[in-house]
Length: 218
Image 1: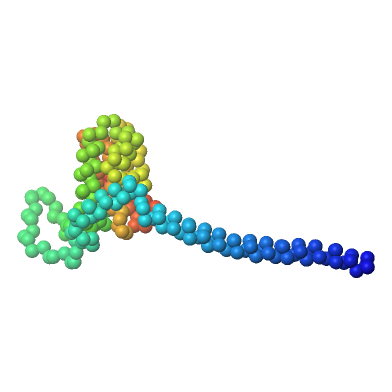
Image 2: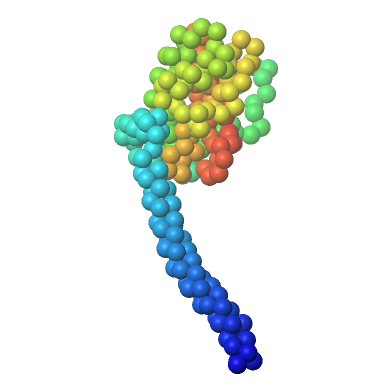
């Protein structure tokens, strides 16, 4: 009898342990699947909520950009860039004063370069709206330090992510604004200098981080 009972006492607990372990594994697997699925759904919903509800500052800035664009012509037309072949000059040639040497080659009209060539009429119109309101505020700004200029731009609705290269230049402060929208390349180059403050259009890379590719600084 001793020989028979021994194996029963030895193996029965082991079987119970294996069964308990299997049940535990099944429970954990089921819980893990539920938690994993729930976690993905929760994360997606959270991301969706954040993307659908921008901050009040961003919403105000976007409303500002939308208002300016609605007041301007459709994109694509650049009246500053000559189109087609130049017309032949039918005017009488100018007389050459005594002692002067006539030019050897005909004088060709200068083609625009930089922002004039790369920005269309819509860009210039949108830029003008931005320039007017920014210049008006900067002209009233005493001691235009970078900190004060940034605060002024923030107050006008331009978030920090649109303000770049803001730096002291003597008693003046220079800065750039990223005004790109929907694949556009518009930016602004600004000078805060009291009564002589100025802002002019510039050209930025169409994609990626903000980078000025063409400008005529004020």
